[in-house]
Each structure stands twice: as C-alpha cells, then as structure tokens.
Image 1 (cartoon, rainbow, N blue to C red):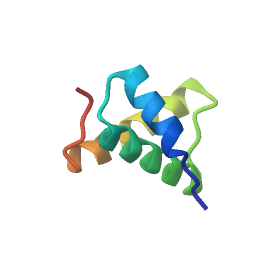
Image 2: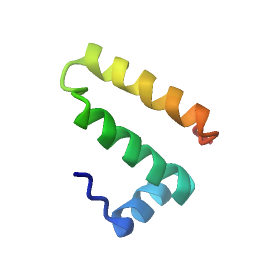
Image 3: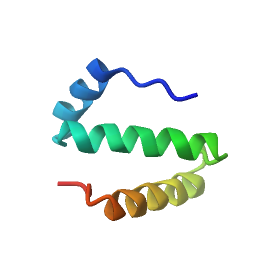
Length: 65
C-alpha cells in the first residue's frame, strides 16, 4: 500500500520548489519503486533509484524545474 499525506506533499513541494503535481508524482513513483524492491540505503542503490525516478518523471513530463 502507498499512503501519502497531501499536507506533507504541499509542504515538501514548497520546500523543494516543485509544483504540487510534480512532488505528488515523485512520491508515488518513489513509493512504487520501494514496493518493487528498490532502496537507497547504499549510495550505488540510491543512484539507480534516482535514475529510474527521473526517467519515469521525464516520461510524465514532470522533470525538476
């Protein structure tokens, strides 16, 4: 299951300078990758996960501003 707080999403979107839509999409993608077994404890795993996140967000046309 994925549970996302919209209040926290709004707070993070403001903190990181992203649109609410982009931040929500990032959290859904990030959470889905965790459910698929990806993690970011080791730096090498973090880089792999970030690459996948950014590729998916690019497809969705929600790249970082």
